[in-house]
Image (cartoon, rainbow, N blue to C red):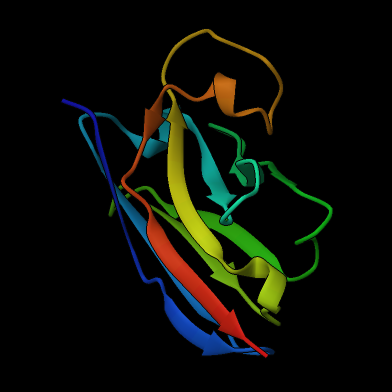
Length: 126
């Protein structure tokens, strides 16, 4: 059974840092395209960061480039999102996602990912 469990969210002041974790079970993170999406109140869900299976290439939303880093630990079967220089506009629920199938709508399109965690809240105050 596939499961994604996020942790690491919280409240931080602007300029601060947080690291989100996503423990995966039921599959190997090294063989799946995985990443993070977020949704702020009243806004559409958006792709934040994706890491490609195998070679570990990454893709980021323009709004987080240079501030966020996605990585994974294959031994711990865990995905991470290191978030630095946080801004109030980063406030959102953050979701861990995994693509375990053949659907393809684009690397940062939520329809591509068929497995989602329950989310972890990140709140950045000014």
